[in-house]
Image 1 (tube, each protein chain N blue to C red):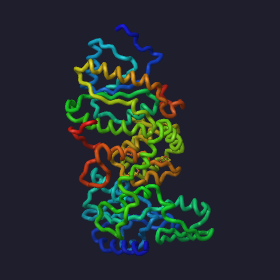
Image 2 (image 1 turned 135 degrees about the horizontal axis):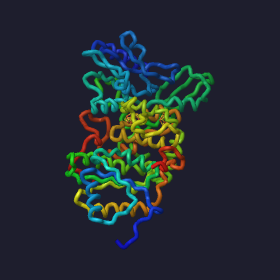
Image 3 (image 1 turned 90 degrees about the vertical axis):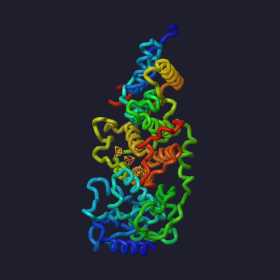
Image 4 (image 1 turned 90 degrees about the horizontal axis):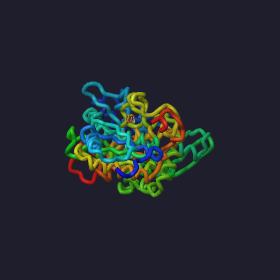
Length: 154
Length: 322
Ligand code: SF4
Ligand code: SF4
Ligand code: SF4
């Protein structure tokens, strides 16, 4: 606990979509164990990565969100048996597609963390946050136009 | 040659008419360059149908979008399809939007379809076209400014220049002789590969540049035979609100992301989205990338096998590396 925590001035906007059954629990475990985590992640809880519409990621990145992390149960451990099997195909296709539109695929990461893996969660989120800090701000697309849906409204 | 094939088409249709309730085909429009879709219900109207390189429309969307063309009890719909259109049929059958048994598919091998806008550009946009004649790959146009000749290749739609499936992949009757594809399957995504030589920022700027012309008329989506949601399309729903009505580039990007991702692993590259765009945006190019990914990751090409399941509608627990 010696090092200084990230200050809000250089905080990045990172969204984490975590599945209710595994990764959300994993993040909780990390918290309960008082493992230090970067503060730039905003968590959105989803019922299952099978609920993960790749458009959530695209919309966020187009809107200028700096990074998007999706995490769910390990393959074969899905609460609904197969949700993450569908998810990994969709998310992999998305990851390969992003650069075609000129969006850096490094701003998006998907992975699997179980409810007991507090330590692993800490590593995943720290690494991803570091990576986003290295990449810097996401220019997004047309985010300079202020609209009610623009990044300022997030 | 086209007259002969058209006559053959009439003959075939007259023969099958007893099993058929409606025929979906093409007829001449207000000038020889413009063909329009037509629905024919009686034998006497069969003579209205034509088949030639101006028959650009993919008619399969009419079978699934309201008010859909459907046949009465025990009868079939006869539908005319080019190679690309036939793949849309396969995709619609795969996803159970169409019942194969209720279709009588008239396949027409295709030598490429013509972009009337390119023709008009060549002959001067203000002239009136009286006659168009194609022989041995040469298009001869009689118009108010005189006579003009051009090679078919110079006025083809982009989808036809990169077509690897000119012959229908599913049909009951085939009219005319099969043709040799313009390109080999291995070359399908060379433009995608070329585009990927550009830097991320160049790619982003390219799309901002071309998509900023988009007026969000949604013609691309409306013409897409696989965009069957119509009034339920999430691009137009307010709840959840994916796109606003504001004309910002961001909203345009999100709209195109919606269309592209909803077609991921389903798009058969029929090119209708691109053909109908009033401002000439290469809309299909976005989907080509998604198809390239699906081919590489899942060895899947859409619209070829009626029994296959599109890769994003299924999964494989054993696949590694994903
Ligand atoms: S048809 Fe063209 S202008 Fe219309 S919404 Fe599609 S891309 Fe935009
Ligand atoms: S997205 Fe375009 S090319 Fe693909 S099926 Fe739809 S209309 Fe055809
Ligand atoms: S873009 Fe998506 S929601 Fe809209 S009609 Fe097409 S498939 Fe349906």
